[in-house]
Length: 76
Image (spheres, rainbow, N blue to C red):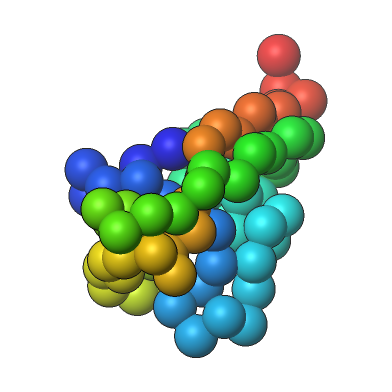
């Protein structure tokens, strides 16, 4: 999952929300209802992640990001 060409941050910029709430919001932004599974990608010195809530960018080893999000929609 990406935002603005960068991987989606695992948390909101201020750390208020992490994991499922962020994954759900991303799924809804791309036309689905919610996230059914998600994986966290390891951070490293070269990691770049973008916060979906503010558009800000995080760089470095403290920037966890999603490696995968599987979305679901009951509107099939």
